[in-house]
Image (tube, rainbow, N blue to C red; front, side, top):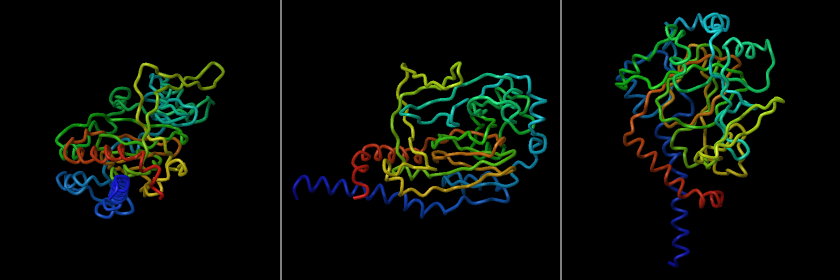
Length: 328
């Protein structure tokens, strides 16, 4: 066999392997929807049935005893937290930490009284931009400690299942225009909706061959005196690998491989908890004024992680070839 023919054969074999792997994983491991649990299983059973196989689920009645479910109205939050300065992410389009015009753009982080943020959320005043309390460095315990007794500092059964405490507990509140772009985290995530709804679009880690990554220079939004937003480049920072694709309106001409992906969609309602396994890609929308708390537990960097790293590396190496030949 001539060398060019041999190389072409290898390319086609790699393409078939990467294309077939997500389908085989989906058939073996995941159904077409995110299952519901009406009864919380014991910690060991949850670890065995959901964490180890890296399967998402929505748990009902997992935190029905939290006072927050009844107490956390916007009026209550204003009473408890109104005068306190909090960190608020502000963007022109609702997309924080997302690709925009060939940049990876982070939000302007604005410190403002919580009551001023609530005035914007409740449309008592108008302000340029989309506002979202979404700082993810355990902001519930760091910025909102007054509220922690209305929930819990940890999820006891998850802490028992994993043998560790959460790395972070985050508080989320924002406008319906605020969107979380498609990404993954190295955490076992318990996402608890207190009021409103969160809409998740999910991809398992095995869909990595269908999900594009590119490198982007980092930048930050900055609002100018006339109310318009500028993009300020961080020239000292390294480029950021991020997913440029919007799964709600994918550019299939540019990313035809995404047609092979089959996302799962689910809505998490008030009183429900989503277990989002580590390394799952997720895109998130919400109802206006949705209040949520999530718990991040660091994942185990075990063989599962090594397998994902192998898949990620193979995809990166093969992507230039695959992009031009996937539809052939």
